[in-house]
Amino acid sequence: MADSPFFIDTKKITTIKDVLDELEQLDTQLSTLGLSHFKLFNSAYHVVTSFIQQAIDTGDFKNPVFIEQFIVTFANYYFKAVTGTVNKYPNVSLPWAKMNEYARHKSSPEFISLLLGANAHINNDLPQALKTLLENADTEVFFRDIAKIDKLLMKSGKEIIGLFEEPDTLLDFLKRRFQFMYYRPAMYTILYWRVMAWRSYRNFKKDRAYLSRITGRSNNCPCLKMAVRSSQLE
Image (cartoon, rainbow, N blue to C red):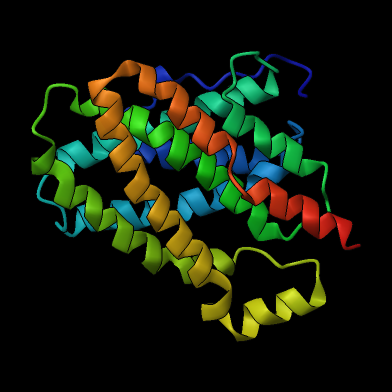
């Protein structure tokens, strides 16, 4: 942990540029903060957010103002999770706490940390972010724009896998030479999670008690079991 208190003031993050700037700042801080296991997810988050900013700039969204609000609201869940993890707040959601559990299994494939971050942010945070934004809105008006982000996720996949190397020689060879076999299963898993998150949002909108089921489902992500199994093979 850093010597001085660490805090991300999410009230000051109001634009996508602010989100990108904060992600870049975090990239230089995470190791010092003891959160090296967040770095890959953080870098991937920056890539995807950059793609979304470009899509806004080229007029790909019908409701760009909403998309910017969505990106900011959604990202602030991540920033709060980072602040809480650094300061060991007791209210850090269990799915984000899984990231620290993963860090104990250092022989796990790098992509596991990416999936764990995506699980916590999509399965747990996304339904809550959607409810915050769409409490009294016609969701179908914005659904197509949100769905366009899924295409951007797939488009960003190749750039994301270029961000890191796998410590296992064989797995890294697979990543470099057979990219479609390496990253497509992970990307399609993330897309599936986004579909499920939309359904969770709709249930959560009807019943606030559904939040416990959202957290429970994302807390039982199989990614950590994969990490544990891979470490046991050493």
